Every structure is written in structure tokens, then in C-alpha cells.
Length: 193
Image 1 (cartoon, rainbow, N blue to C red):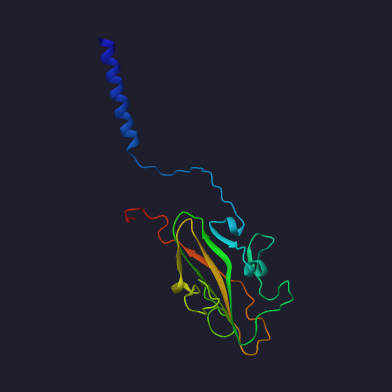
Image 2: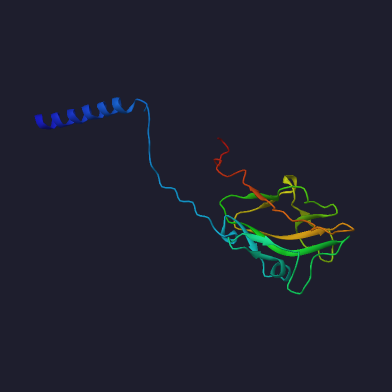
């Protein structure tokens, strides 16, 4: 009987000491953790940029040596050298933007000089321009023109070129930035931060 009382007493003492030691704050902690970040070709990335199997995509879109999507409307395999001057040309079905991440994303093309709808400029759109012109197109240049792409879905993108009357220089020859903003990523489901 005495032994039992001793063990119970020792257990209580141990719990009490643990509570006293654990109640203080720490001054410093260093913890090593594993982190792996992989870079993927554009079609396989979280924001997938995928060439399509369409006549326009096959003629003008490819992946470069680094796996980055590249559009070249300056030449094609049939000896064409570009769009007509003083014209608007639509290239439907050039590529897809796919949301392969973990949250819905608002996607748009950064608005820089040379992009837009004025002569001598290039724009990007969803929808089909062939036969309808701009009717029914949603342009995605500039943050105010962003489109929402849900997780696991893709949006087909076309390119619209509006060339000036006398076009001797390239209509557009620069990099384009595609921005995907996931405003809800990382927020608690109840909305409290």
C-alpha cells in the first residue's frame, strides 16, 4: 500500500514540474525544415501556358529551349511574313492558360506600351473572333480586364493584332507578362486572419 502511494505522489510531482518548466516563453528557436521547389515547363506549371493543337497555334506558338511559351506571328512555314498593314487580324485558339494551382486565380496580361486595341498594338482575348470581329470577345489586357480561372480549368486565349496604315517595323516585339493573382490563397475559410 505504501508503494502505491509513493508512485502516485511521484507522478503528481513530475506533472507539476513539467507545468512550471513549460509555462515560460522561449528566447530563441532554430528549426531546420525541408523545402523543395521545382521549376516546370510552362504547360506543367501551376499557371499552365499550353500550346493548342489548332492551325493558329501550330503555325505560330511553340515552347522554346527552356520550355517557355513563345508566340511568333512574324513568319510561318508557308512563307508568310506577317499581318497586313492597316488591318485587324484575329488569331483564335493560340494557347490555353490553365490553373493547375490550389486556388482560383484572376488572370490578365500586364498592360504595357504596345498592348491594347489601338493601331499598331496587340491584344489578348478569350472567345472566338473569327467571323464576329470583337463581338463576344473578352479582352484580358490590364488588371481591370482580368478573368477568373477556377482550379483545374483552362481558358483558351487568342491574339488580336491591329496594325497601322504604314507598318514597316514589327507591330510588337517585346516580352509579355501574364499575371495570375489568387486573392483567396492562404486565407482561413472563415475569413478571419
